[in-house]
Structures are given as structure tokens and as C-alpha cells.
Image 1 (cartoon, rainbow, N blue to C red):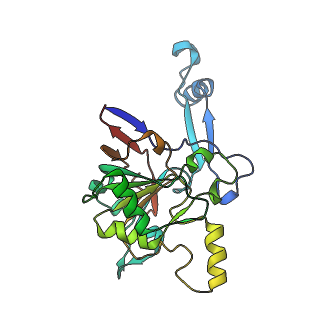
Image 2: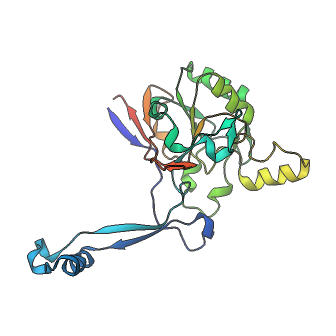
Image 3: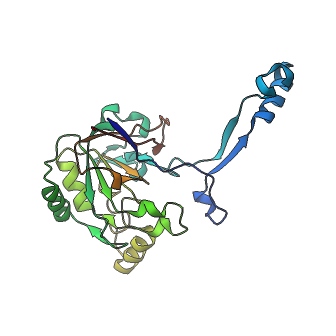
Length: 253
């Protein structure tokens, strides 16, 4: 089998990144580790291999949505279908390992809608019949822009209608290789203000369904349309609206 990494790298954000979206890391090298060992335990560097101690890193800023991550229903609303929405630590592990399928919408322009009819047509094109707990991955090609300043405002958006269509067929985890599952926030905001009605902004997120989204995926273009497994276990953040995840596809050779 082959393992294909579908996760974005975790790196410190460039200086122009808005503060709310920043990822910040500090790195301690082996010399600093040796100094820490001497300070903590009185063991001098001469007693360490090559005079080196441990290298360690610290996240000084990492939001649960700042890299490839799995959204929990709690992210969308406090209640879903009349019940308290589940946080990321409350979801069944079985959801996060299963058969994968890639739907290719990379020809879509930024802000274009992905409808239920288009999802159904794409499944027909690749000859895949959805099964219970399939993990559906939407390819937009915007992972090429992961490090671009405008990454956040690029990509099409999966509609609430398409999200419900997938959910009704047993899909509980859906992913995308763009910043978000809905259309870019700036475009949603413009439409919501123009129409002056609820249900336009964040429509798929807030469609009142207890499902999960994987956002900020990468390398979906390296996958076949189906015939592979996806592992997307999120970190167990108690009470969390999301959990960063190392998402991996397992493909038979």
C-alpha cells in the first residue's frame, strides 16, 4: 500500500497574516537543550552525546482551525437538530477512518457553488455509489495556494443543499482542499448583505446537521477517484470546536 499525506504543513505564519489567523512557533536547538539540562539537573554538556541536549518546539499560537483540521458540529452552532451540538472529543472514532472518494471540482471558479446535482453527476462520472460512512473529499486545486496571501478568499463553495444530499446518504465526514467548505467568507458576506436575510452566510456550516468537515486539505490530486481509505483522526481537544489532524490516504498499489 501507499500512504499519501493530505495535510498542510504547520509552519509559522508570514508577517502579513492577520493576528486572528496566525500560527506561531518557537524552536529550541540542541545547545539550548544542553543548557536546560545543566540548569535543571546539574548535568554539564560534556556528559551528553556531542555536547547536545534535547531539541524542542513550543506552539505559542495555534488555533484549532489554523491548519488541516476537522470541524465538529459545535463549530457551526450551539444546538444541532434541537440538541446540544457535539464537540470534537465527543464524536465517534469510527467516523474518522473509512473509504474515501474524491469529487473533482477544480474547474470551478472562486465563489462558484457546488450543487447537489453536480455532486451526483460527478459520482456518476467516476462510477462510484456512495456507501455508509464514505469520506467524501472535494478537490478544488486551491491547495496550490496554501502559502499565498489570498488563500483564504479562494475556492468554490459546497452548498447547503449538496451537504444535505451527502448527509442523507450516510456521509458524516466531508473534506475540501480549500480554506473553507462554504464559499470564501468575503463573497458570502457580500451576498448576505445584498439579500439581507439569514441562511446566506455560512449556509452549509449552519444547515443544522451533525456532520464534520475537514478543511485545508492538500494533495487530493495525487489520489484516484475511489478505492482508498482515509484516516483523519482529530486531536482530542476537550470541548473543542475542531481538532488539527494528520490526514492520510491509504492506497493499494
